[in-house]
Image 1: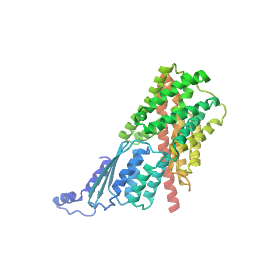
Image 2: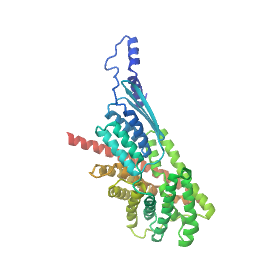
Image 3: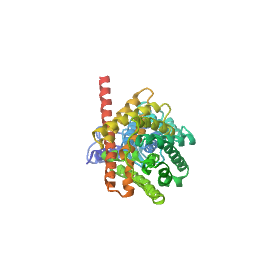
Image 4: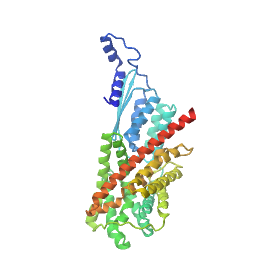
Length: 445
């Protein structure tokens, strides 16, 4: 029997002490304290809080392993020694054994992504629940208030933020001066589509296809005749925000962590999102004309990608509503991730994503420990946005769409990049935990 099976078996016995006593009595023994532990009396608000907290953590895009660890830590803080959780990407089950019986609850994940301001507030609350005695009723009210919190910026600023995000990625991926206005216009256009999609469910479902189709048509029929640039050079930056990079990375983390069901389901979902984008590009090319393959272009100035990283941070602030005062810290982690990615690429291209992700986790943890630093997740998620476009090399869509001979190689490179980022995240998390444990031991001994 596996360790998890043993734990579930023991929890089940603790959850049914009367049955266990009857079995021992039939065997001629009286149960002692070493045989069965009476479940403690836990606060009545604990299970509803764990249910809501698990749902919100899932909607924040966290792996099921992180969600389980957070829920069990909070439960133990409030006296629940026999707690069982079953977390899937679409919902969370919670079971707690109490003196009055076993309490079970379930919540389905809403599937609607939270902005970074909400995610940061949720993780701040989790940290307080794990370290201080927060009244559970107050914690539940705070969770409801966080979910109802509107974005920091209105519709116009949010759409402009997507335009800045596109310009930033354009500077990183293809820093050509005369294309910057094109990036801005297309980014604002796609940002408006995303804003409409968040309020019109029918459009929201087909939004990746619609956006990829329209951007492809504009790139082929307008930008290419006007500026002479290859359409793929214009196509990539406006669509970067649709890349399911975080989903694919979390899926790889879950698969390598033996969370097979969760990892496989996320992987299928992420691949489906990519295929929707590819379908939109193919449909646009079928209507507008040939989609010429993009070729690598020399960087005009060495500092353009670094400037692009800073612009990405500003675009993230307005588009994804990063918490107040977090922009300088987001810049720190973004610049560190990009520098580490470049160092990894100098050794070997497949190592770029791994080295970048390896640097992100400890750097975000250091930022979190500063007096004004936001939760690590607030700086980690924008860094994944920066790592994944560079690692996935969406320019490989040209070979896939045109049926080029290198299409299979591009897909293989994309898979290697995603798992490299996942492995870097796992190793970085392990190093960070070990360093934190050693530091606590040194300062408490």
